Length: 197
Image (cartoon, helix red, strand yellow):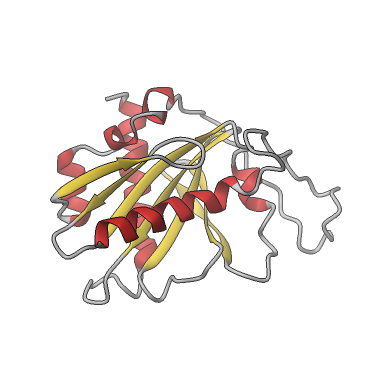
């Protein structure tokens, strides 16, 4: 039962990002400071200066973390790939039901899609420092960052991102700070993509 709940929650997190496109499968246009948003709240979308080719992981996101990386991050005992809204997602679980998930979102507008929701009245949006040289934000439709949930969205090309989503149980020492684990998980995935392994 827990596996089903976590898989569904992971799919919902990825759906959040893909909902930013105007039509399914159609990239959302990048916003600029001359857009309809008021100049005081509009932020420029950071560009990806060294794009990564993640094509080989788009249909096999479980290859984004080695077993050693997954064990270091969450003491993973198993992983599971599931269908996502755009591409498959992979979730790793520990013995206590904590979960980390990764999924790529190719050709969905890149970080511009996430920035379109920066002023939303629900959920959360926070630009964070680059993760290993790649622009990133914390964003989701529901703010559960103080209760075990967090999602980082990382731009690896101007038209591609990946999500690093976390769902932790109350007994986890990172329950009050799941975003730190989302950032570490994203950094591990970037290492893998750069290495091409």
